[in-house]
Length: 170
Image 1: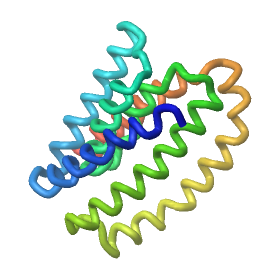
Image 2: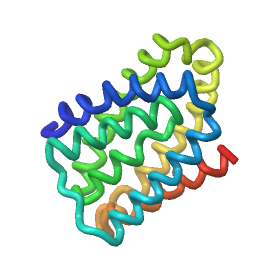
Image 3: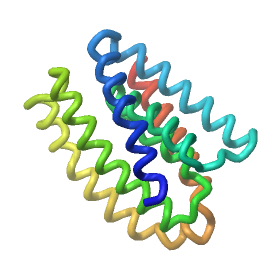
Image 4: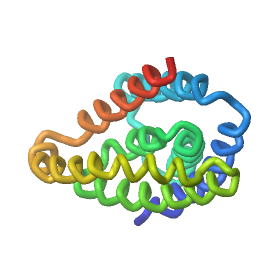
């Protein structure tokens, strides 16, 4: 809960910016740019200094996550990268709370910009079986990931999301 407020404080203007960008820039270009940005961030965090989780970095990650989430649907990677060094249970609980609140906020903002309606709702509902299946699978691997460390899993999932975004945008 310590950094939740700061992260959400960043997500709010970021989501508004992302919705505005989505309304004016082609989604194909955004996907490539954001995918490359996430891959670059992974490279920096893998080779560079350890990111310190504090109010400033939580707000900054929130702005980037809000903009990316509202405009490309891949907003989780910046948040996962900033929280990557936290213990597994804390990482999962924090990101679950942030993603839930941020998703509701982004949907409301996208609706306000006329970018979320019946078609998007139907598409989202079609993804629910995959979501439920992911929860089921995750429960089987939680203890193993906690023993081996969450950082590698966070980086791998973030990289996979970035690569899929780039491929989808080409």
